[in-house]
Amino acid sequence: MHNILAAELMKLKKNKMAGTGTLLLCAIPVLAMIKKILIDKDSIGLQEWYLTIFLLQTIALPVVNGFVLTSLIQREYQDCTLRNTLCAPVSRSAFLLSKTVIWFLWFFLSASAAMLLTISGARLLFPSGFGTDELLLIAGQLTQQALLVFLTSLPALWIAVSQRAAFYPALLAVLGFAILETAGMQVSVEWLLPASLCPWTAVSVSVLVEKGGGFYFLCLLSAALCGALGLAGALRAFGKQDL
Image (cartoon, rainbow, N blue to C red; front, side, top):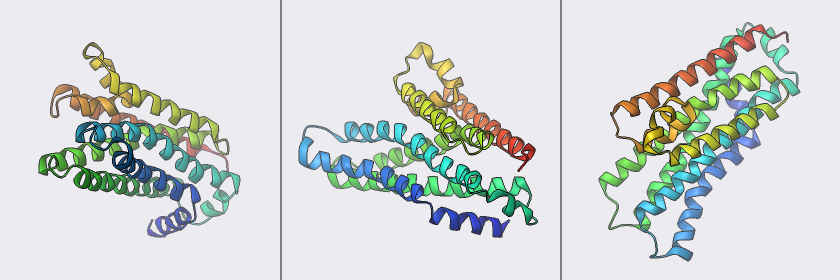
């Protein structure tokens, strides 16, 4: 398993899409800081500045994540490297799980870098309004958002594996996920229950509802089930393929 992880890590280092994705995610807080300094100046406060970043991350995270996923999966099929890789004493499940672990590590580290830039920007731009409470709030919400986005992106792994070299279906799926997650930011009270049951709208709803409440745990449960089904479906589809 260690050798597979090392091999997948080397592939990730050579993947230009992964580096581009990291830069795009980090560019959001950086551009928000530049805009605040040069354009907005004293016209907006910390809350509005942070909410703008959060909304942009809601759109960017699943889309960038999907592009990196498809580049990792479809390249294996396009370059016909899977047959040689799986000729070694490596199970298909171990191979796909290793690729998923590396994908998660890239995503979480990239999201964490963007989060640190957001926190640094908030501290520099709003020194009087940024304290421990604001730090914990931003760190908690962005970490939760990243984890839930990854879980709800796992069905795209299933689609990517099932479609083999065709990358459009998985990309269309993650674009749909991004639209639903953005729509979750606009959910009214009467739509909280269905929005909490839908894994993708639940990503945003989990931030809006009371932490520790019923809707909050329902959001976490729906996202977790979505991730489990997506991973199980991907493993099953990959195991049945004739390579």
